Amino acid sequence: GADGGVTGAPVPSGADGGSGADGGIGSGVGVDVCTGSAVSCEPPFGASRPPRDTRIAASTVSSATVSIAYFAFWFINGPPKNYGVKNMEKIALVTGSSRGIGRAIALRLARGGYSLCINCVERIDLARELAEQINSAGGRAMAYWADVSDAGQVAEMLAEIKRGLGSVSLLVNNAGIAGQMLFQDITQEQWRRYMGVNLDGAFNCCQAVLPDMLHEKSGCIVNISSIWGLRGASCEVAYSCTKAALVGLTRSLAMELAPSGIRVNCVCPGVIDTDMLSVLPAETLGALAQQTPLGRLGTPEDIAGAVAYFASEEAGFVTGQILCVDGAFIV
Image (cartoon, rainbow, N blue to C red; front, top):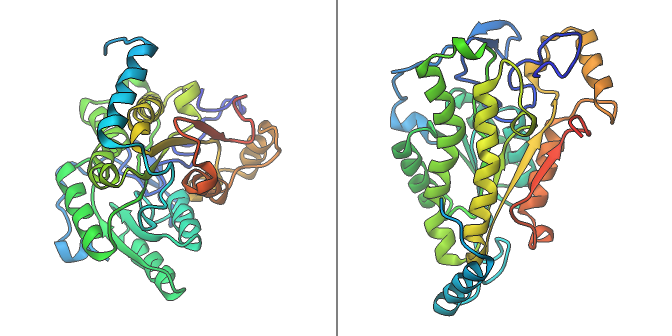
């Protein structure tokens, strides 16, 4: 289950570090990653949006049929230009990137020459600080407040990115929420919120960036799932369901977009040493590290490295893949 078998104590929600990294609109009781204190994480349904100026800174077919369809697509549209993003400017949208894993991903991509949109739904101050850090180092970055579960807000965000930076060539779907509770205690609102942010958010962002990628026959999408999306976790049913769905989305979308030269891959973090783990007792952290065969907890930079690989030309022939970055935690 979610406790990873450690003295019966559950691993805190979002301990895999994936999603939840932007903070949470989670449910139940969570952890304030700034103060380290326990806080209520009930989703702020009906919460008002910040003003605009504060947001900116089923059938089965044979393989022969599939082959014929691919050939026909290429014959009409021409073969894909490449399997990376070299035909487009290096412009990345990393959702939920004001802190945690998302922040590490943004910094790694900036070092690799990407212009960045730092997206968040809570800590716009941290998003702006990160954008300023990247800009002061000679890069290009903007911060934008948007709830990815809202397709309208995502469309507005993409339009602003296009005006300020250009067309997105790399999408990293990192935003998400996490929380622990018994399955029978999950309310309809909480269930919909999990699905809305963790799954619909990826759906909305993929649909928003694809027109330009399809036009260029180039681009890359990286989804951040979780080891709990592959194995499941007790008391984290909603979270695990959404993360499992991201795995299915990755594999299916990769097949659909391959003829257009667009690659889709997925990273599944293990237990990652983020602020969310800072409130755990030292003995619990030690037990988690001992249970990880590599003998340590993962870092946000470990996940960022995996994303950078998928985004690189070295991964130009890699698509539809699920990469666990977990120190062999679930092998």
